[in-house]
Image (cartoon, rainbow, N blue to C red; front, top):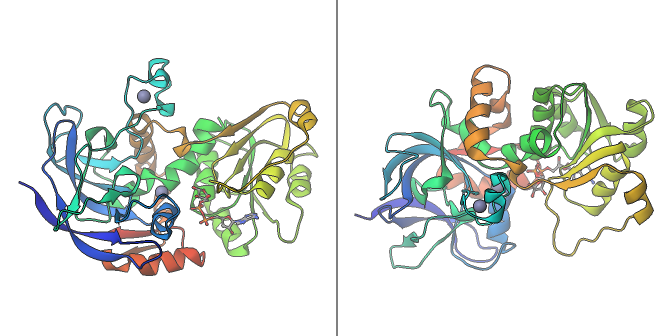
Length: 361
Ligand code: APR
Ligand code: ZN
Ligand code: ZN
């Protein structure tokens, strides 16, 4: 039988979010209902509310979550009721050309639940990134649930569902950061800090944090940055070269998503080095570079989708490393809040006051 729960809805473009009763159907074939225990507040939720990601209002916000599987539909074998899971928004299909080539982290046909959650009047909701987890319960595709060690707290586990995984993965998956590498990270919000933590985990010898805000640089240091550069005061390309024997970093991670910071990343890497773009640009942004420099500097220019993560491989591993004390995921949780405080959390995020506000249910 369908259930009624409380959830945070974005009703229309730029309207404040509000709590509504959400009708969650029983899971159909391949689906699962998850009792959400914690869900982080991400920029993407704010973009949905602002109308920046289509106009399929009303949206059921929230997508960075962990919880316990309550029920599963027919044919679900990977998870069962009672499992503690992190939700992901790239449930791999196993059949597309990327999956068939053995590169499922690029899956080109990721899927979500087939049924829709609704308001009590039957209005269909669009769940943020196919999840919708600012709610007591949510309906997802079973492949969006990844089992991890239940010894970790839900507020920490949920972080891996989006931004923190994107940053760690940008370093360890996309950038292939390894022992002894020099790394520079431009933009030290939640994503950039996670790239710093990931680089430290991977054994980078030098980790240079670049931001325009000194508060952010201070946090970056606590995450593992060995050097910091305020790019409002100092030319970051020069500074990164100076700190790397005049050459540039082996891997530069751009975690802002702007042409000017991408250009800095491009010129701050060593010959044959790697640039990873994990910051998300907006549609009007354009990049111009001398093609001869693209050729002459060699190496690789890569984008990182969701940290090129494979949830089934990466989530349990990172939770285990966290539990061993080798990856401080708890440092990303600035505050825990209630479901009715999401709007306030957006304001704090906008002011740059928090790494992550996490709704605890
Ligand atoms: N140079 C350096 N740092 C900058 C610049 C700049 N020109 N402009 C902004 N920053 C810094 C901000 O001071 C902030 O610390 O970039 C950081 C961005 O952090 P957040 O706003 O917290 O964003 P975050 O959640 O880390 O996401 C970063 O990745 O997933 C995408 O959409 C997301 O594009 C965004 C990026
Ligand atoms: Zn696929
Ligand atoms: Zn997100």
